[in-house]
Amino acid sequence: MPVRPTTPRPSIGNPSRVLTRDLATLPDGAGATLAGWVHRRRPLARVTFLVIRDRSGLAQVVVRDPGVIAGLADVPEETVVEVTGRVLHHPAAPGGAELVEPTITALTEPAAPAPAELWRPTFGAGLPTQLDHAAVTLRHPRRRAAWEIASASMRGFRSALTALDFTEIATPKIVGTATESGANVFGLDYFGRPAYLAQSPQLYKQMLVGVFERVFEVGPVFRAEPHDTVRHLAQYTSLDAELGFVRDHRDVLVVLRAALAGMVEAIESYAAEAASLLGVDLPRVPEEFPVIHFTDALALVGADPGEPDLSPAHERALGEWARATHGSDFLAVEGYPMSKRPFYTAPEGYPHAGAQPLSDAEGVRGAEPAAGSNSFDLLFRGLELTTGGQRLHRPGDYRAALERVGQDPEVLRGYLAAFEHGMPPHGGFAIGLERWVARVVGAENVREVTLFPRDVQRLFP
Image (cartoon, rainbow, N blue to C red):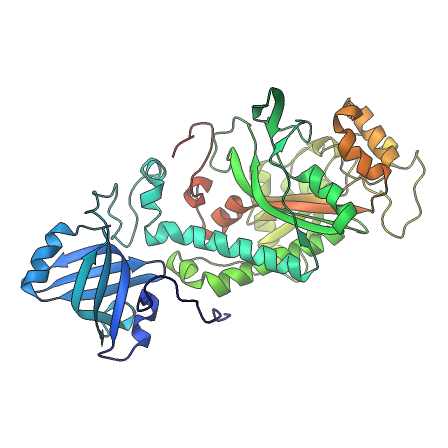
Protein backbone atom coordinates (compact mmCIF):
# COMPACT_ATOMS: atom_id res chain seq x y z
CA MET A 1 0.00 0.00 0.00
CA PRO A 2 1.44 3.43 -0.89
CA VAL A 3 2.73 5.48 2.02
CA ARG A 4 1.09 8.81 2.67
CA PRO A 5 3.52 11.52 1.53
CA THR A 6 5.17 13.46 4.36
CA THR A 7 5.81 17.01 3.25
CA PRO A 8 6.68 19.99 5.43
CA ARG A 9 3.57 21.80 6.62
CA PRO A 10 3.51 25.57 6.95
CA SER A 11 2.93 26.87 10.45
CA ILE A 12 -0.68 28.01 10.89
CA GLY A 13 -2.05 29.13 14.24
CA ASN A 14 -0.27 28.16 17.44
CA PRO A 15 3.27 27.12 16.40
CA SER A 16 3.54 24.74 19.37
CA ARG A 17 0.38 22.85 18.45
CA VAL A 18 0.83 19.17 17.67
CA LEU A 19 -1.71 17.05 15.82
CA THR A 20 -2.87 13.99 17.70
CA ARG A 21 -1.39 11.69 15.06
CA ASP A 22 2.06 13.22 15.64
CA LEU A 23 2.08 13.12 19.44
CA ALA A 24 3.91 9.79 19.59
CA THR A 25 6.73 11.17 17.43
CA LEU A 26 7.81 13.46 20.28
CA PRO A 27 10.19 12.23 23.00
CA ASP A 28 9.09 11.53 26.56
CA GLY A 29 8.95 14.69 28.60
CA ALA A 30 8.63 17.04 25.64
CA GLY A 31 6.14 19.86 25.94
CA ALA A 32 3.24 19.82 23.49
CA THR A 33 -0.07 21.53 22.85
CA LEU A 34 -3.15 19.78 21.50
CA ALA A 35 -6.19 21.64 20.21
CA GLY A 36 -9.49 20.10 19.28
CA TRP A 37 -12.79 18.84 20.66
CA VAL A 38 -13.38 16.96 23.89
CA HIS A 39 -14.29 13.61 22.40
CA ARG A 40 -14.77 11.75 25.68
CA ARG A 41 -14.49 12.35 29.44
CA ARG A 42 -13.87 9.33 31.66
CA PRO A 43 -13.77 10.26 35.35
CA LEU A 44 -12.38 7.63 37.72
CA ALA A 45 -11.75 7.78 41.46
CA ARG A 46 -8.49 9.76 41.38
CA VAL A 47 -7.91 10.48 37.72
CA THR A 48 -9.89 11.72 34.74
CA PHE A 49 -9.08 10.80 31.17
CA LEU A 50 -9.88 13.23 28.39
CA VAL A 51 -9.82 12.07 24.79
CA ILE A 52 -9.14 14.98 22.44
CA ARG A 53 -10.20 14.79 18.79
CA ASP A 54 -8.75 16.84 15.95
CA ARG A 55 -8.70 16.45 12.20
CA SER A 56 -6.05 13.74 12.37
CA GLY A 57 -7.45 11.46 15.07
CA LEU A 58 -7.61 10.99 18.85
CA ALA A 59 -5.20 11.51 21.74
CA GLN A 60 -5.52 10.91 25.46
CA VAL A 61 -4.95 13.46 28.23
CA VAL A 62 -4.42 12.27 31.81
CA VAL A 63 -5.66 14.64 34.53
CA ARG A 64 -4.66 13.98 38.14
CA ASP A 65 -4.69 17.48 39.67
CA PRO A 66 -7.89 17.77 41.78
CA GLY A 67 -8.30 21.44 40.88
CA VAL A 68 -8.09 20.74 37.14
CA ILE A 69 -10.45 17.79 37.54
CA ALA A 70 -12.98 20.02 39.28
CA GLY A 71 -12.81 22.53 36.42
CA LEU A 72 -13.67 19.81 33.90
CA ALA A 73 -17.26 19.90 35.10
CA ASP A 74 -17.65 22.97 32.90
CA VAL A 75 -16.00 21.32 29.88
CA PRO A 76 -18.51 18.82 28.47
CA GLU A 77 -17.94 16.68 25.39
CA GLU A 78 -17.63 18.57 22.09
CA THR A 79 -16.30 21.70 23.80
CA VAL A 80 -13.33 23.08 21.88
CA VAL A 81 -10.20 23.19 24.02
CA GLU A 82 -6.48 23.77 23.94
CA VAL A 83 -4.39 21.45 26.14
CA THR A 84 -0.72 21.98 26.97
CA GLY A 85 1.20 19.29 28.81
CA ARG A 86 4.07 16.84 28.78
CA VAL A 87 4.35 13.83 26.45
CA LEU A 88 4.43 10.38 28.00
CA HIS A 89 4.63 7.26 25.87
CA HIS A 90 2.20 4.57 26.99
CA PRO A 91 1.21 1.46 25.00
CA ALA A 92 -2.42 1.66 26.18
CA ALA A 93 -2.90 5.23 24.99
CA PRO A 94 -4.40 5.98 21.55
CA GLY A 95 -1.46 6.23 19.16
CA GLY A 96 0.99 5.07 21.83
CA ALA A 97 1.42 8.39 23.68
CA GLU A 98 -0.57 10.63 26.00
CA LEU A 99 -0.36 14.08 27.50
CA VAL A 100 0.12 14.44 31.27
CA GLU A 101 0.23 17.35 33.73
CA PRO A 102 -2.10 19.32 31.47
CA THR A 103 -3.27 22.90 31.44
CA ILE A 104 -6.70 22.97 29.81
CA THR A 105 -8.17 26.09 28.26
CA ALA A 106 -11.69 26.14 26.85
CA LEU A 107 -11.81 28.07 23.56
CA THR A 108 -15.62 28.17 23.44
CA GLU A 109 -18.54 28.19 25.81
CA PRO A 110 -19.49 24.73 27.11
CA ALA A 111 -20.90 22.70 24.23
CA ALA A 112 -24.55 21.70 24.19
CA PRO A 113 -25.27 17.96 24.32
CA ALA A 114 -24.71 16.32 20.94
CA PRO A 115 -27.70 14.67 19.20
CA ALA A 116 -25.84 11.35 19.39
CA GLU A 117 -23.01 9.88 21.45
CA LEU A 118 -20.08 10.71 19.20
CA TRP A 119 -17.55 9.00 21.46
CA ARG A 120 -18.90 5.52 20.84
CA PRO A 121 -16.81 3.47 18.36
CA THR A 122 -19.93 2.61 16.37
CA PHE A 123 -22.50 5.18 15.38
CA GLY A 124 -25.95 4.02 16.41
CA ALA A 125 -28.11 7.01 15.48
CA GLY A 126 -30.65 6.46 12.71
CA LEU A 127 -30.27 8.08 9.32
CA PRO A 128 -32.83 10.87 9.97
CA THR A 129 -30.90 11.94 13.08
CA GLN A 130 -27.62 11.78 11.17
CA LEU A 131 -28.95 14.01 8.42
CA ASP A 132 -31.00 16.41 10.55
CA HIS A 133 -27.90 17.20 12.62
CA ALA A 134 -25.24 16.61 9.98
CA ALA A 135 -22.98 19.47 11.05
CA VAL A 136 -22.47 17.65 14.37
CA THR A 137 -22.94 13.97 13.53
CA LEU A 138 -20.34 14.21 10.75
CA ARG A 139 -17.80 14.69 13.53
CA HIS A 140 -18.04 11.00 14.39
CA PRO A 141 -14.91 9.30 13.00
CA ARG A 142 -16.92 6.72 11.06
CA ARG A 143 -19.21 9.35 9.56
CA ARG A 144 -16.39 11.61 8.47
CA ALA A 145 -14.36 8.66 7.17
CA ALA A 146 -16.74 8.19 4.24
CA TRP A 147 -16.15 11.75 3.08
CA GLU A 148 -12.40 11.39 3.56
CA ILE A 149 -12.69 8.59 1.00
CA ALA A 150 -14.73 10.89 -1.24
CA SER A 151 -12.16 13.65 -0.91
CA ALA A 152 -9.33 11.28 -1.79
CA SER A 153 -11.33 10.01 -4.77
CA MET A 154 -11.69 13.53 -6.17
CA ARG A 155 -7.99 14.09 -5.62
CA GLY A 156 -7.16 10.89 -7.49
CA PHE A 157 -9.55 11.73 -10.33
CA ARG A 158 -7.91 15.10 -10.82
CA SER A 159 -4.39 13.67 -10.62
CA ALA A 160 -5.08 10.84 -13.06
CA LEU A 161 -6.60 13.09 -15.72
CA THR A 162 -4.04 15.85 -15.25
CA ALA A 163 -1.36 13.22 -15.90
CA LEU A 164 -3.14 12.46 -19.20
CA ASP A 165 -2.90 16.13 -20.22
CA PHE A 166 -6.50 17.04 -19.43
CA THR A 167 -7.47 20.62 -18.56
CA GLU A 168 -9.78 21.22 -15.60
CA ILE A 169 -12.77 23.40 -16.49
CA ALA A 170 -15.60 25.13 -14.62
CA THR A 171 -18.86 25.35 -16.53
CA PRO A 172 -22.05 27.34 -15.73
CA LYS A 173 -24.51 25.89 -13.26
CA ILE A 174 -27.23 28.32 -14.35
CA VAL A 175 -28.24 27.58 -17.93
CA GLY A 176 -30.81 28.85 -20.38
CA THR A 177 -32.10 25.56 -21.79
CA ALA A 178 -33.59 22.46 -20.26
CA THR A 179 -33.09 20.18 -23.25
CA GLU A 180 -29.84 18.35 -22.46
CA SER A 181 -31.56 15.16 -21.39
CA GLY A 182 -34.87 13.66 -20.38
CA ALA A 183 -34.36 14.43 -16.70
CA ASN A 184 -36.53 17.04 -15.06
CA VAL A 185 -34.93 20.36 -14.25
CA PHE A 186 -35.08 22.98 -11.51
CA GLY A 187 -36.36 26.25 -12.94
CA LEU A 188 -35.50 29.66 -11.58
CA ASP A 189 -35.99 33.33 -12.33
CA TYR A 190 -32.88 34.81 -13.92
CA PHE A 191 -33.44 38.56 -13.88
CA GLY A 192 -36.93 38.12 -15.29
CA ARG A 193 -35.99 35.36 -17.74
CA PRO A 194 -36.49 31.61 -17.31
CA ALA A 195 -33.35 29.66 -16.45
CA TYR A 196 -32.46 26.29 -14.99
CA LEU A 197 -29.94 24.59 -12.76
CA ALA A 198 -27.61 22.54 -14.94
CA GLN A 199 -28.40 18.85 -15.26
CA SER A 200 -24.78 18.20 -16.26
CA PRO A 201 -21.86 19.99 -17.90
CA GLN A 202 -22.32 17.81 -20.99
CA LEU A 203 -22.89 20.43 -23.67
CA TYR A 204 -20.18 22.72 -22.34
CA LYS A 205 -17.54 20.05 -21.99
CA GLN A 206 -18.22 18.97 -25.57
CA MET A 207 -17.83 22.53 -26.79
CA LEU A 208 -14.58 22.86 -24.87
CA VAL A 209 -13.13 19.78 -26.56
CA GLY A 210 -12.90 22.17 -29.51
CA VAL A 211 -10.64 24.37 -27.39
CA PHE A 212 -8.55 22.11 -25.13
CA GLU A 213 -9.12 18.62 -26.69
CA ARG A 214 -9.20 16.98 -23.24
CA VAL A 215 -11.22 18.43 -20.35
CA PHE A 216 -12.60 17.39 -16.99
CA GLU A 217 -14.73 18.91 -14.27
CA VAL A 218 -15.66 18.11 -10.68
CA GLY A 219 -18.84 19.89 -9.69
CA PRO A 220 -22.50 19.73 -8.67
CA VAL A 221 -25.32 18.73 -11.01
CA PHE A 222 -29.04 18.97 -10.40
CA ARG A 223 -31.80 16.53 -11.32
CA ALA A 224 -35.41 17.29 -10.37
CA GLU A 225 -36.56 13.75 -10.91
CA PRO A 226 -38.97 12.75 -8.11
CA HIS A 227 -36.97 9.69 -7.08
CA ASP A 228 -37.03 8.77 -3.40
CA THR A 229 -34.73 5.77 -3.52
CA VAL A 230 -31.51 4.77 -1.79
CA ARG A 231 -29.46 5.54 -4.93
CA HIS A 232 -30.82 8.90 -6.17
CA LEU A 233 -30.21 12.50 -5.11
CA ALA A 234 -31.53 15.79 -6.47
CA GLN A 235 -28.03 17.23 -6.26
CA TYR A 236 -24.86 15.22 -6.49
CA THR A 237 -21.20 15.65 -7.39
CA SER A 238 -20.31 14.64 -10.92
CA LEU A 239 -16.81 13.71 -12.08
CA ASP A 240 -16.94 14.49 -15.80
CA ALA A 241 -14.43 14.00 -18.59
CA GLU A 242 -14.48 14.55 -22.35
CA LEU A 243 -11.71 13.92 -24.86
CA GLY A 244 -11.19 14.50 -28.55
CA PHE A 245 -9.75 12.46 -31.41
CA VAL A 246 -11.17 9.14 -30.19
CA ARG A 247 -11.62 6.16 -32.45
CA ASP A 248 -14.79 5.08 -30.64
CA HIS A 249 -16.16 4.56 -27.14
CA ARG A 250 -13.45 2.02 -26.30
CA ASP A 251 -10.95 4.92 -26.09
CA VAL A 252 -13.24 6.53 -23.54
CA LEU A 253 -13.18 3.31 -21.50
CA VAL A 254 -9.38 3.47 -21.43
CA VAL A 255 -9.50 6.93 -19.84
CA LEU A 256 -12.27 5.89 -17.46
CA ARG A 257 -10.13 2.98 -16.34
CA ALA A 258 -7.21 5.33 -15.65
CA ALA A 259 -9.44 7.69 -13.67
CA LEU A 260 -10.84 4.93 -11.46
CA ALA A 261 -7.39 3.45 -10.89
CA GLY A 262 -6.20 6.89 -9.82
CA MET A 263 -9.14 7.22 -7.44
CA VAL A 264 -8.39 3.88 -5.78
CA GLU A 265 -4.68 4.72 -5.50
CA ALA A 266 -5.53 8.06 -3.89
CA ILE A 267 -7.73 6.33 -1.31
CA GLU A 268 -4.81 4.04 -0.49
CA SER A 269 -2.44 7.00 -0.19
CA TYR A 270 -4.58 9.66 1.48
CA ALA A 271 -7.50 7.89 3.16
CA ALA A 272 -6.03 4.55 4.20
CA GLU A 273 -6.97 5.07 7.86
CA ALA A 274 -10.54 5.96 6.89
CA ALA A 275 -10.80 2.90 4.67
CA SER A 276 -9.42 0.70 7.46
CA LEU A 277 -11.84 2.17 10.01
CA LEU A 278 -14.80 1.31 7.77
CA GLY A 279 -13.42 -2.10 6.83
CA VAL A 280 -13.40 -1.18 3.15
CA ASP A 281 -12.46 -3.81 0.60
CA LEU A 282 -11.02 -1.58 -2.11
CA PRO A 283 -11.58 -2.81 -5.66
CA ARG A 284 -8.76 -3.83 -7.93
CA VAL A 285 -9.11 -1.94 -11.18
CA PRO A 286 -8.12 -4.33 -14.00
CA GLU A 287 -5.77 -3.30 -16.77
CA GLU A 288 -8.74 -3.55 -19.11
CA PHE A 289 -12.41 -3.70 -18.22
CA PRO A 290 -14.28 -6.82 -19.34
CA VAL A 291 -16.87 -5.78 -21.94
CA ILE A 292 -20.16 -7.37 -22.96
CA HIS A 293 -22.58 -6.18 -25.62
CA PHE A 294 -26.03 -5.12 -24.45
CA THR A 295 -27.83 -7.81 -26.48
CA ASP A 296 -25.54 -10.48 -25.04
CA ALA A 297 -26.09 -9.10 -21.55
CA LEU A 298 -29.87 -9.45 -21.97
CA ALA A 299 -29.45 -13.04 -23.08
CA LEU A 300 -27.09 -13.80 -20.22
CA VAL A 301 -29.58 -12.67 -17.56
CA GLY A 302 -32.55 -14.23 -19.35
CA ALA A 303 -34.24 -10.93 -20.14
CA ASP A 304 -36.60 -10.22 -23.03
CA PRO A 305 -34.41 -9.40 -26.07
CA GLY A 306 -36.64 -6.39 -26.72
CA GLU A 307 -35.85 -4.75 -23.37
CA PRO A 308 -34.42 -1.23 -23.91
CA ASP A 309 -32.49 -1.13 -20.62
CA LEU A 310 -31.13 -3.20 -17.76
CA SER A 311 -33.06 -3.41 -14.51
CA PRO A 312 -31.30 -3.26 -11.13
CA ALA A 313 -31.77 -7.02 -10.84
CA HIS A 314 -30.10 -7.48 -14.23
CA GLU A 315 -27.19 -5.28 -13.13
CA ARG A 316 -26.72 -7.35 -9.98
CA ALA A 317 -26.74 -10.58 -11.96
CA LEU A 318 -24.21 -9.20 -14.42
CA GLY A 319 -22.02 -8.06 -11.53
CA GLU A 320 -22.02 -11.58 -10.12
CA TRP A 321 -21.17 -12.97 -13.56
CA ALA A 322 -18.27 -10.53 -13.98
CA ARG A 323 -16.88 -11.51 -10.60
CA ALA A 324 -17.24 -15.25 -11.27
CA THR A 325 -16.06 -15.20 -14.89
CA HIS A 326 -13.50 -12.41 -14.97
CA GLY A 327 -12.64 -11.92 -11.30
CA SER A 328 -13.62 -8.28 -11.76
CA ASP A 329 -15.67 -5.81 -9.74
CA PHE A 330 -16.25 -3.93 -13.00
CA LEU A 331 -18.11 -4.75 -16.21
CA ALA A 332 -18.70 -2.47 -19.18
CA VAL A 333 -21.94 -3.03 -21.09
CA GLU A 334 -21.77 -1.49 -24.56
CA GLY A 335 -24.19 -1.10 -27.46
CA TYR A 336 -27.24 0.24 -25.61
CA PRO A 337 -30.18 1.03 -27.93
CA MET A 338 -30.13 4.55 -29.35
CA SER A 339 -33.61 5.03 -27.88
CA LYS A 340 -32.11 5.00 -24.39
CA ARG A 341 -29.36 7.48 -25.13
CA PRO A 342 -29.31 11.30 -25.53
CA PHE A 343 -29.51 12.85 -28.99
CA TYR A 344 -25.76 13.52 -29.12
CA THR A 345 -24.86 9.81 -28.83
CA ALA A 346 -23.06 8.20 -31.76
CA PRO A 347 -24.56 5.02 -33.24
CA GLU A 348 -22.56 1.87 -33.77
CA GLY A 349 -20.39 2.21 -36.85
CA TYR A 350 -20.13 6.00 -36.55
CA PRO A 351 -17.04 7.54 -38.21
CA HIS A 352 -14.04 8.08 -36.00
CA ALA A 353 -10.59 9.58 -36.07
CA GLY A 354 -8.75 8.29 -39.14
CA ALA A 355 -11.86 6.72 -40.70
CA GLN A 356 -13.45 7.50 -44.02
CA PRO A 357 -16.71 9.45 -43.50
CA LEU A 358 -19.89 7.48 -43.84
CA SER A 359 -22.50 8.58 -46.29
CA ASP A 360 -25.74 10.04 -45.00
CA ALA A 361 -27.41 6.71 -45.58
CA GLU A 362 -24.80 4.97 -43.47
CA GLY A 363 -24.49 7.61 -40.77
CA VAL A 364 -26.71 8.80 -38.00
CA ARG A 365 -29.61 9.48 -40.38
CA GLY A 366 -30.02 5.74 -40.68
CA ALA A 367 -29.76 5.03 -36.95
CA GLU A 368 -33.11 3.65 -35.85
CA PRO A 369 -34.05 3.98 -32.18
CA ALA A 370 -33.57 0.24 -31.68
CA ALA A 371 -30.10 0.34 -33.25
CA GLY A 372 -27.09 -0.01 -30.99
CA SER A 373 -24.98 2.93 -29.89
CA ASN A 374 -21.31 3.58 -29.30
CA SER A 375 -22.04 4.05 -25.61
CA PHE A 376 -21.66 2.05 -22.43
CA ASP A 377 -22.61 1.74 -18.81
CA LEU A 378 -19.90 0.69 -16.39
CA LEU A 379 -21.22 -1.56 -13.65
CA PHE A 380 -19.35 -1.58 -10.34
CA ARG A 381 -20.19 -4.47 -8.05
CA GLY A 382 -23.53 -4.91 -9.77
CA LEU A 383 -24.59 -1.26 -9.87
CA GLU A 384 -24.47 1.25 -12.70
CA LEU A 385 -21.67 3.66 -11.84
CA THR A 386 -20.95 5.47 -15.08
CA THR A 387 -22.54 6.22 -18.42
CA GLY A 388 -20.34 7.27 -21.30
CA GLY A 389 -19.54 6.84 -24.93
CA GLN A 390 -18.78 8.48 -28.26
CA ARG A 391 -20.66 11.61 -29.34
CA LEU A 392 -21.75 12.87 -32.72
CA HIS A 393 -19.31 15.41 -34.14
CA ARG A 394 -20.57 16.28 -37.65
CA PRO A 395 -23.03 19.19 -38.01
CA GLY A 396 -25.27 17.33 -40.44
CA ASP A 397 -25.62 14.45 -38.04
CA TYR A 398 -26.78 16.80 -35.30
CA ARG A 399 -29.41 18.32 -37.56
CA ALA A 400 -30.69 14.84 -38.38
CA ALA A 401 -30.59 13.67 -34.76
CA LEU A 402 -32.52 16.68 -33.50
CA GLU A 403 -35.09 16.29 -36.26
CA ARG A 404 -35.54 12.65 -35.30
CA VAL A 405 -36.29 13.50 -31.67
CA GLY A 406 -38.38 16.56 -32.52
CA GLN A 407 -36.03 19.08 -30.94
CA ASP A 408 -35.82 22.67 -32.25
CA PRO A 409 -32.16 23.31 -33.19
CA GLU A 410 -32.60 27.01 -32.45
CA VAL A 411 -32.74 26.28 -28.73
CA LEU A 412 -29.23 24.81 -28.94
CA ARG A 413 -27.76 27.24 -31.44
CA GLY A 414 -24.75 28.17 -29.25
CA TYR A 415 -23.90 24.52 -28.72
CA LEU A 416 -24.39 23.55 -32.38
CA ALA A 417 -22.24 26.44 -33.58
CA ALA A 418 -19.17 24.72 -32.14
CA PHE A 419 -19.72 21.81 -34.53
CA GLU A 420 -20.20 24.10 -37.52
CA HIS A 421 -16.70 25.39 -36.87
CA GLY A 422 -15.04 22.00 -36.66
CA MET A 423 -15.13 19.43 -33.87
CA PRO A 424 -13.04 16.24 -33.69
CA PRO A 425 -14.47 12.81 -32.98
CA HIS A 426 -14.88 12.78 -29.22
CA GLY A 427 -16.47 11.09 -26.25
CA GLY A 428 -16.62 11.14 -22.49
CA PHE A 429 -18.16 9.91 -19.28
CA ALA A 430 -19.47 11.02 -15.89
CA ILE A 431 -19.09 9.34 -12.49
CA GLY A 432 -21.44 10.09 -9.62
CA LEU A 433 -19.12 10.64 -6.66
CA GLU A 434 -21.62 9.74 -3.94
CA ARG A 435 -22.70 6.57 -5.71
CA TRP A 436 -19.04 5.56 -6.11
CA VAL A 437 -18.29 6.11 -2.43
CA ALA A 438 -21.45 4.33 -1.29
CA ARG A 439 -20.45 1.29 -3.32
CA VAL A 440 -16.85 1.39 -2.09
CA VAL A 441 -17.81 1.50 1.61
CA GLY A 442 -20.83 -0.76 1.26
CA ALA A 443 -23.40 1.85 2.33
CA GLU A 444 -27.01 0.84 1.74
CA ASN A 445 -28.14 4.43 1.15
CA VAL A 446 -26.24 7.06 -0.82
CA ARG A 447 -27.27 9.64 1.77
CA GLU A 448 -24.99 7.96 4.29
CA VAL A 449 -21.95 9.22 2.36
CA THR A 450 -23.29 12.65 1.37
CA LEU A 451 -22.46 15.70 3.48
CA PHE A 452 -25.80 17.52 3.19
CA PRO A 453 -28.10 15.46 0.92
CA ARG A 454 -30.75 17.06 -1.27
CA ASP A 455 -33.67 14.90 -2.33
CA VAL A 456 -37.43 15.17 -2.71
CA GLN A 457 -37.85 15.26 1.07
CA ARG A 458 -34.83 17.22 2.26
CA LEU A 459 -33.83 20.87 1.82
CA PHE A 460 -32.26 21.49 5.25
CA PRO A 461 -29.73 21.69 6.79
